[in-house]
Amino acid sequence: MNLSDFDFDLPDKLIALNPVKPRDSSKLLRINSSETFENTIFSKLTDYLNEGDVLVVNDTKVIPSKIIGYKVNIKKELTKISFTFFENRENGQWKALAKPARKINKNDLIFFKNDDDKFYNLFAQIIDKKGGEVTFDFASDSEKFINILREKGDVMLPPYITSKRDIKEEDNSDYQTIFQNNEGSIAAPTAGLHFTDNLIKKIKKKGITVEKLTLNISLGTFLPLREDSVEDNTLHSEYCYLSKKTAEHLNEVKSSKNRRIICVGTTALRTLETSFENGIFEPINKKTNKFIYPGIDINSIDALITNFHLPKSSLFILICAFMGTNKMIKAYEYAIKNNYRFYSYGDACLLEK
Image 1 (cartoon, rainbow, N blue to C red):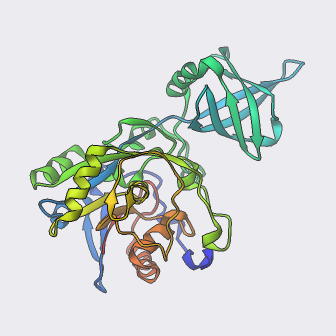
Image 2: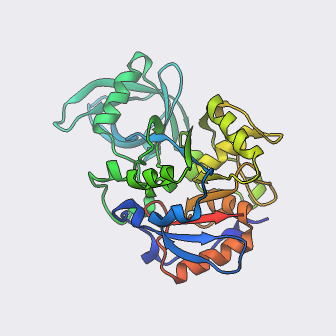
Image 3: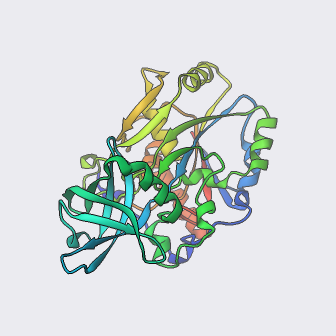
């Protein structure tokens, strides 16, 4: 199975650079076992949900992870480096992507400064470097650094957006779901971006419950796959959590005949598949590098709400595993022909087995 099997051509005009407003006015493409596809809008999602169904959402919160640091040489000359922090490790250590990485080395001290050109009283040492990935040691200043990220950092929008426009103030709210609770992601679980408070009220009024889990989105979700053979690729590990209470509820739903588990987003699905062993959901609190591709059965859910993904990405490959590659290639051809908007700020699809 080659990576090229999951490639397709997408016109640039269909890459969504901004979200629609209100959020639930985005288009929704329903895809199931029939040969036809159904066009609707996201605000009508309740028409396709049944009383007793359970929606499972990712409640992660995006942190402003991108910030500028400075390397200072003996002559007190500054070298400006852009860092995207993607993992808060133990003991004050953080991992980041550096750009340009060639200008820094292991053991360098990096300073961070504010808008009025005065340095923060904060610096960190690079204790490890592998390619463009670096590990910082903030020692006892890790909490101080988190506060600086919150105050001065930028959200890390995908390059297919930032290559065409600047980051705007409203991105800080647009790029968060209404379920946000547990801080730790560098990217949004984008399927959740379509939900509004009013839509959730309608969903609950119909007798549908909403369960939450957490997967803190990091490099494993959005880095491109490198190996031509799909099976040879591995994903970076990402933290995920599913509570005992939620696991018990999902097991109850799974054992009934007329109730469905409807997953919101590929990150939530990877968490559920990590939890689901021998037909049972188990509570989890660990990292996962679960990579799902055709040939791997997905048995934890009945339906999936997700956005339209990049070609040759682990996310597109995952939905091909769920619905079948030929089915999804045809669905994407249909979506392109009908001007669906793609990627993070784009439209959504409802996949039903």
